[in-house]
Image (cartoon, rainbow, N blue to C red; front, side, top):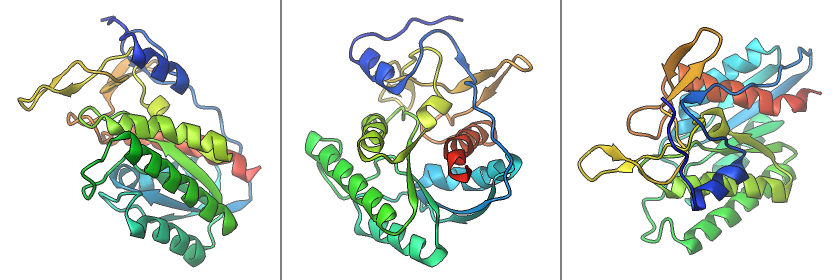
Length: 249
């Protein structure tokens, strides 16, 4: 069933992220990957959404014929603003000799009473810029993930939007899991205060239509944050492999 597009401020956000608006979410095309004999060392950093996708990303690189040694370093609940995060990125590169570092943080922060404020977002972006500079200084290529929108934590949506801007400003690679799991319309979900969801302010998809067989498959958990396994996890993994494939050329 077709649904109405949410207008206003959301429209600007959607346009900036390259999203579209109509009915149920439809799988977006991913450019084909070329087989190569070259090998790369890839480190995957971040919080629980990267932790979810790590094994699938490794499998998708293999499926695409991109030879890689992949190191899993994501930690559930990690905050980019916590001191260990930046230090762990540097340590991981030194320990593995990484060529590529893919980083996905969603805005976790249990320590700051101002999480989600403008000042907090500025601090988050400064830290992301510093991590990108660290990765480069150690000889690796940084890739920043824009996480998919979260239903019950709106600051993740701004973190996702800002990740694309920071990547563009710094010249870092960008991997948009938002686009990988985007709804074709601008369906929005926020907590209704009773344990359920109601319409709010973000482009969102729980299900995606796969045109190959006309099937609709679940890609997000009902809590509106993590990816559903296998379809949602596979989708972001394939998008990631496609995005970083240029490092093999």
